[in-house]
Figure: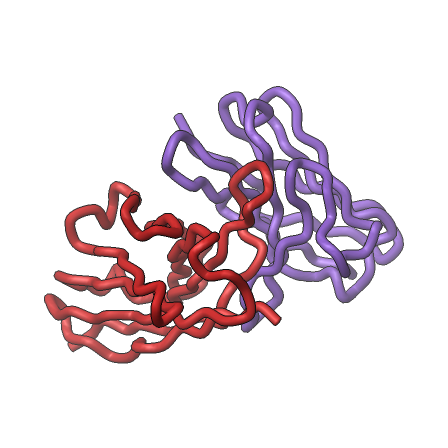
Length: 120
Length: 106
């Protein structure tokens, strides 16, 4: 069974940093791009970043480029999202998402999400 | 513009057909996907590659995509289909989501 388990969320002060791990299981980890998507309170889905199976290609949404860094450790089946300079606008549930290997770019498995609250 | 526009809400009676649109410049040139999100839960893929259903998704869910509009159709809508629905495609290396549509079944 495919599983994506996010952790690391919590309360952080404005200007602070946080690292979110996503541990994967149940599939060949290095065969898949992995993405991060977030959802603010009462808001829609917002794509943040993605990383390829080898970990050497990463792209970011314009709104987080330069503040967020995605990485992966294939030996640990884990993807990370390092977040810096957090503001209240970054308050959201953060989802780790698996991209399908089928044609087209779509997400066939989502984690349960980890909540991040940025507040003093 | 690479924005995807969805109606904020759609309402149908049980048994009726619900159609949720997703509009964007030349969205038909890329595969569209749709996700269902029930309150307090993670999104679930219900349609991919415009009109395919993952295993376990009822055949009352279908999709189409042409020109500037992708459409999710739910035929014989059930109360349990009440949820938020998001369309998704991509543009070069950026993933695009629609703003989401709240489907109310009453």
